[in-house]
Image 1: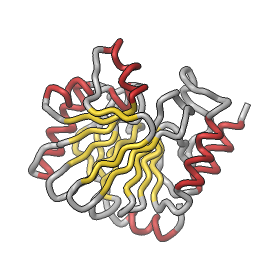
Image 2: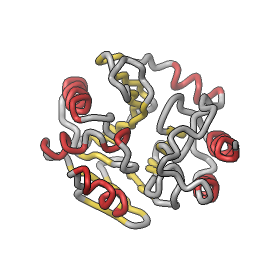
Image 3: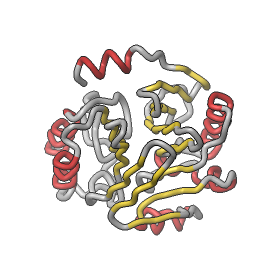
Image 4: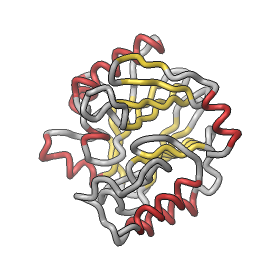
Length: 232
């Protein structure tokens, strides 16, 4: 991450709102949420919150319904309103694990049509699906959802906030802290590098890039992800 981004983000102290949940402000409109996959206090999963004048949009739920319920209560307490929309970046639990909870609370969900199909066996459903791209207009910011191809999973999408120059890459991208490809059970190792290259070409000036796990970074995550994918 370049020094300008590092200093601005580092200036905002992280807030541990639960043993398994931490919030950190990235900009006027965006907050990084880090949660625990195993609910053991080790914060290893990234979500993004977009805070507009009326909407609160969550990108990726925590890995299960109980932790998602806790997060939603914490966010309502902090922002004095409820989450209104949720974006699912792929079908794995670290993105969709709390979808039943958000559905019960009437929170509209968005995701790829392929993700919706893959979630059916888990009795989960996405309200609004797309095939290639989708734009969501809020009050002062826009969210742009893109599917560039398979990678970590066949259905991984990215979320771009042009006004903030923030890209949520999810598990398609690797943190600079990563030393291996991670969970590749559902990965397409042949297509993955081509998909990342498409993302790199589309968002070369991304100010903040958020991977699915571990530390966030900037556009340097694109080349680092390509390096990690190439490892045997």
